[in-house]
Length: 158
Image 1 (cartoon, helix red, strand yellow):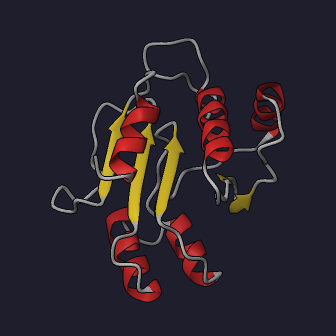
Image 2 (spheres, rainbow, N blue to C red):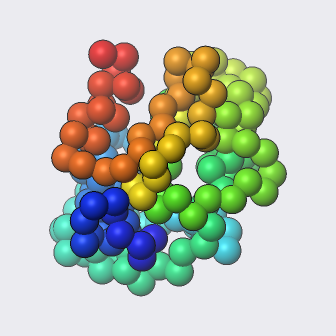
């Protein structure tokens, strides 16, 4: 996450921290996780300042992003999730299964047929992580000020 957001001098970890802050401040139930050597729950909350988010993000030891891992983690912990949002610098690996298969597995196992998956590849130029025939999957390639609104509109089916 130390690579730069496409077309900027902002580290992907900084953009992810700012976007996470917005989600945590405006949504009721957000479970922030980070990709390290394992999927790591973060103790980020709505009472933190932007500076605290940025400092916390800078201290993390990031690992490769296995985009299937959040869904598998949620199944393992029996957590009901409406929307999975994965923020990555595009250092992506597929260890267990493709993210499109993982969200299908999650939907079946948790009986959440409309669970959504959003992957934001902040340095990515191509979106190959989603099933183009699945209306509840979205891959956003790159990062700009419209991304939070795109996420919002997708989540509420605008």
